[in-house]
Length: 291
Image (cartoon, rainbow, N blue to C red; front, side, top):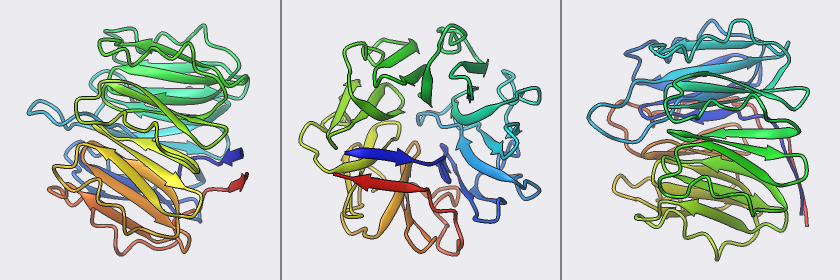
């Protein structure tokens, strides 16, 4: 399988959801306590990211990142740890947002990071030849040009044990687990598996992946979706979905972008983060799949 996935056009946080429209503007729903949904003035955006975090009484604050067409980055929301201090970034081609931090991939294959670094999750200055990045709550993952993977940060559940991975074409990071999509359409996962979030060994024909706090979502080549892991809020109830071209998973809700530019959502909706039924004209990712 040869896979090319363009930049993210839907993004999901703990309590909010963000969508990139085909005209380069951005829309958001859900909790806006820290201004993480104040994206109405954004324009010329080509990719988005939303800070996600596991569900706990002391979590939920979030930020939203927008990558502009000129390689600069916009940020709104919670900034207690400097995770929104991206104004001086240049030549960025991809972004990722974790809890309290932001990761930027530069056009030369190096990586920059701002925000909380208590567990080394921002120690990416030595990385090179990186083609994709992902951010979990406390760990950061980088996909290298040769299909191998590197990781920094919290490794309590071996979620950074990716040194043996090969032929990876996409990756995602959840709360305490890491997921990799292989070139043959199979999926590998390491880390915490208490909820079965790493039980992906039987998956086949997968073309895109996303990781929530305790669940993992796989987009199949026929436009249907597979899910494993925590389902207390119905975030894995995706078996009826069809015509899906992109997926995004937050703490306890899951988003699917349909081929007509509309969006479906399941899971926790306490803050209105699943109220996307009225969305139209969401940018479709440029994806080509060849088996």
